[in-house]
Amino acid sequence: MNFRYLTVFTFLGVLIAGLWFHSQNQHTPQGIHKLDVAPFDAVYIVNDDDFFDYQVDLIYRSGEAHNDSLDGLPHYIEHLAADRVAKSTSAQQNRHSNAWTSGTGTGYWQSATINQLRDTIQALVNTAMPLDSDPEFAKTEIDIVLREYDERLGGDPLHLHRNAGMAVLLQDAALARPVIGTKSSIEQFSLEAAQALHAKTHDLSNAVLIIRGALDETSITQLLQNLDYPPSPASKFHRDISIPALMPIRDVAQIDVDKLDQRILHFDWLYQVDVCDSALDCEARNLIAAKVLFSTRAGGLTTPLQYDEFVANGFEGYQYLMWDTAFAVTIYASPEPDVSLDTLADRIETHLRATAENGLPKASFDAAKADALADYTPVPFDTDDEVARLTTAISYANDYRSISALHTQLENTTLDDVNAYLRSMLGSSRIVIRKYMPAE
Image (cartoon, rainbow, N blue to C red; front, side):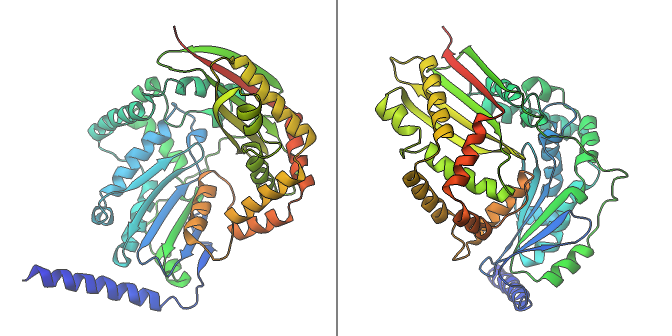
């Protein structure tokens, strides 16, 4: 047979199958739709006529924070379970599988053609089947994880100190655990330990399935109802990963660090927020506040630290949700040559307190709000941005809130709202400051 014609016929077959699936998709509008299909906690279909193939994500709402064993073990489990996906027929056709682990989630994803869609979803579902990795492969994979640890963190002299500082900040809460583990914990991994934790955490009733492509709700529901699923666990695994009520602290330490070539200040401020009406309300207030704090706008840090007082040679900062109603400000900064780390820390804290006490100037608020609204514009509907928002929310154990919903919340957010949010920093809070010095 002429293989050139075989290739053409194969392509036409896939094209016709895809067009047929598109033709069945008349009653499901573009956008994100949530389905209730057992055994999953939730199923989202992202109906996207412009996305010719399909992408499938399976995200378990369990990560390192839910680990009751050796640090980093969920990441090792991810490696073993992803290998099962990679050995499936559909994954071989797609050449590789993809997976990740965070503090609050573990995810596996695949792309597929229409002809591969059922097998691809089944391959991802199979990550919930009992872990039956070959013992020799499991041992070899420990070496792979150790190599990954060295590649990611081997050149970072601060990572162990950051882990220790995070444990202080979060009062040893489970969210402070290092996702990839430590060298000593990785060296203690075993297939038996992985199998035990996997059986607790890889539960489809605690997982979210996301399918993107030209989709029809009825067809997808029928497909999912005809897959092979593992039996549900006899009891649901639960591990409390909440942050304890904040006990105020201001913990400052200087640490001499080997292989560090400059002085670095690491500043964390954790605070509880109880002034918001909803998580979406808090997100909108935080977005606007951050767009001022880390800018040259009045009330921000950039102008006083770098241009007025000349104490910071450079810095980067983040203001973000840590968990539930606990938010944090994190700043990494390097001082000017003639400025001490003590002085830099003092100026950062002084300016943050001043903004929290006095609030944002109206002009700064107006400009930051306009920027935030421009960043989160629901029209035209951007599927890539919306899917990124969906997967990020699920990955970090948050509820999905659309860009349109956030845009509306931003429109309704006032200067008083943001200033009330900032004043929360002055309440029950924890400040952890680390002054990293190059070791002599």
